[in-house]
Structure formats: structure tokens, C-alpha cells
Length: 228
Length: 181
Image 1 (cartoon, rainbow over the protein chains, first blue to last red):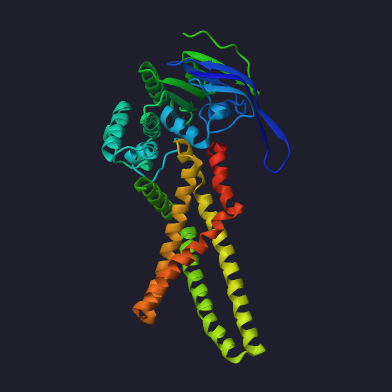
Image 2 (cartoon, rainbow over the protein chains, first blue to last red; image 1 turned 120 degrees about the vertical axis):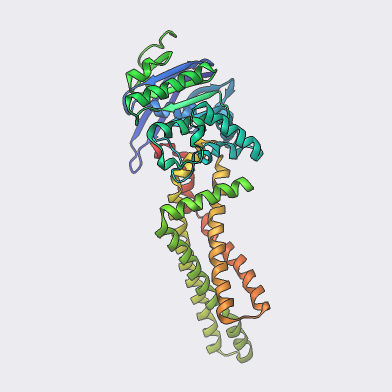
């Protein structure tokens, strides 16, 4: 469960002393097994929020509890471990190592854990099967289509069996048909019990989530909608 | 350790494939640094011995000049290495961000960066010294001395890593996830 209260984040623009208030007091609660869309225009603060939820960025003020743990008390190592085991990321540009094959990319999060080669192989194969690309395991990522790359990114995100999947514009670089397939994949992962948070500016993508939250200028502008 | 080495190997391969020029400069720079450093410093013991025998101001000046020359050359090599390190770390910025996103702590990211540069500097120095053994047909004692120099020089050329200017790109890329967007 994610509980965020009065979260604030300010950036200082490089090369000047000008400050940007990316988040100006956000309150959000995301329950387990939810599928939530966070909508907003470019620069609204949605990616900042996702990075904070994913323990990538720190915040200046407020409270963030992840599964009952006060995130501000975590050391860098503990935050990294939590990120590795509980959170999976899916990004618009896939963030894959293009020169390597699918299997190597998917196994990356497992290299930070104490697992044997056999356990790593089993987990990778399971993740690839879950996203229906087990036949591509030895193909180089650079040779895959956009939809296939996003499936690899999703496989990498779920390989450690995390509770949360955070997706930042996951269909932003895909055509309509492939977007639909990827959203279907997210829905099935949600049905299996994963909590999914999707950042998007696309209303069609947001409509496929069970709940929508709209952000503008670092604030929530629409009340959290009732779960469908 | 095996997994760290695997990650380091992946990073090295990626850098050599995608950034051939800068990586070639890096390795060539290490080899040249090694040769200049060894050449300059190798004459210092003889000059010192000469000074002890003669005790003249001329011999002292000569020794001092050689030491100054060696220091200056080391300083230039050091700055060169520092700059090249920065380039290598800049190349890895995106990969550092991906690794931290996937659960690598700051310590792990820095360890991988250090392993990468250490492998590059050690192999560069080793190559330079072994080629010297081959070309000058040195005896086994010289070979041992050279191996020790490889370790010492590699340690010396890793020093720039401890300059904040060099560490900054790694830490920046770790902290600044926005670089990826």
C-alpha cells in the first residue's frame, strides 16, 4: 500500500538559481492490487511523483509510507533493495541495453540479489513466458519491434515478482494496436495481484485503468475517482 | 563478485562497441602514461647515486630537475587520466541510471565503475610493461619489478577517481533520474 501525504518537491534549474515547485503538496493513497492512472500535461509533476514513489528521487517535505515503511528513514542501500525486490519500472523509451539479448536484459535486476544461476534462469524463463516472448530470449534487443521491446521491459520489471509496477508513458512510443496489447498485459498482471501505477497523458490509456488521478502544476486537480 | 564482473564486462563491451574512439584514447593514454612515467623515473636512482658520489651543486640541480620533470609529467598524466575517467563515466551515465532503477545501490554503481576503470588501467599498464619486457629482452628480475610497477601505476592512475570532479558524473547520474527522460 502506498500512502502519500502533503508531498513537496522543489528543483533548482541548472545554471540559475530559479526554483521550480514540481510537487506542491500531493495526497494519494494506492491500495494493494489497484490499477491507477496518473494523468496530466507535460511538466505537471507526474514523472517526479513516479520517481519518488519508485524511491529513485527524494522529496523535500511530506510523508511517504510504502507498505507501512516510512521511506524517509531508509538508507540508500535499503532503498535500493526495496526498489529491487518490490518495485518494477516500465518506461516509455524501454531503457534496455540494446546490444544485449533479451535474456541478459531481463536478468539484470536479479544480479543484485543472491541467487544461483539456476534460480536466475528459472525466474527469467517465467517472466518471459508471462509476457509471451519466451521464443525471443536469445534475440538482440536492437532487432526487436517497439512492442516486443516493451514486453522485454515488462518482463524485466516483473522478474523479481515485485508488488508494484510503475509505468511512465508505457505506450507513448507504440502504435494503437500494440498499445492495446501492452495495456491488456498490464490488466492481466493486475488481475494476478500486482499493483500498477501508470503515468500517462493519453485519456484512452487512463480510461483502461480502474482509477484516475489528475495532476496539474504539482497538485491533484481532480478528486480521486471511485474504483470501476 | 562474479555478478559484479559480469556487469563490468557488459559495460566494457558496450563502451567499446558504442564509443570506440574514446575507449581507444583511454587505453592508448594509459599505455603512454605508463611508458613516460617509467622512463622518467628510471633515471632518478642513477642521478641520486651520482649526486651521492660527487656532492656537487650541479649533480643536485640535475637530480632536482629530473624530479621536477617527473612530477610535471605525472601531473600531466594525472590530469589526462582524470579527464579520460570523466569521459568514461559520462558514457556510462545512462547505464548507471538503469542500474540504479533496477535496484543497484550507490555503492554498487560506484564499485562497478571502479572495476571498469581498474580493468582498463591495469590491462593498459600490463600491456605497456610486457611489451617493454619483450622489446628490451629483460631478465626475470626486471620482469618482477615491472609487475610491481604495474600494480603501483594502476593504483596511481586510479587516484583521479577520488577527485570530486570525477566522481560527480557517477553520483549525478545516480541521483538524477531525470537524465533518462
